[in-house]
Length: 98
Image 1 (cartoon, rainbow, N blue to C red):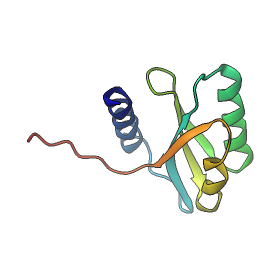
Image 2: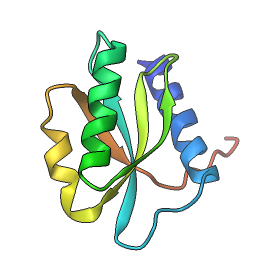
Image 3: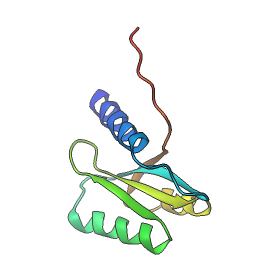
Image 4: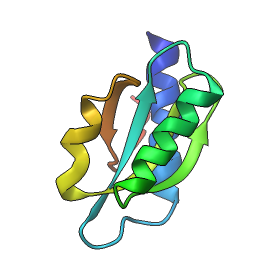
């Protein structure tokens, strides 16, 4: 569980450092269900692009995920795809010492 959280945190940090979403779009991390194959990644990328979205990055180590930018009205479509484990909207993350 800690590895999954840490990997998600790194992915979120990567997205924050990348370009912000275009107007009318939001950035998401789409985590793929295991086992993740190249075919599953290709299908997810094709679905995102065919829906007017953009794949910003592919994370292949640790948590298998796509960093994507989607039109705001198409997000719910992807949450129910059989290859999606879960999706998180991009947000700014701050790490502080306790």
